[in-house]
Picture 1 (tube, rainbow, N blue to C red):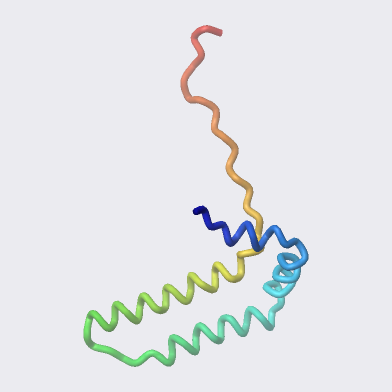
Picture 2: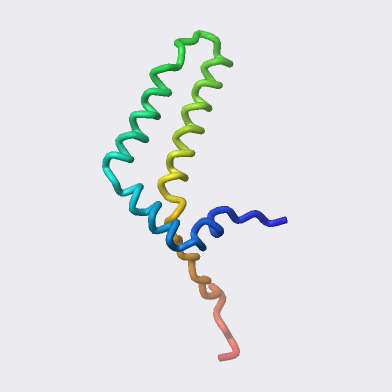
Length: 91
């Protein structure tokens, strides 16, 4: 089974266009940043290394989620195939 949620989301053109309009809205971006900051500020101060590592992972996970949320409708072009690096001696 090959799951492609990004491609499936982008296939619905009206939905993807509405999402693109939303993520360029300053109010929406400010709300996302405020929510991330609120989550960081709500974390307790910890002295234990394991708890500190877990807190760091929560922050990086939330940051990665926001990056994916903001860019899910962006269509990325696949890089073109690079030409062979070897010389064709038969030419």
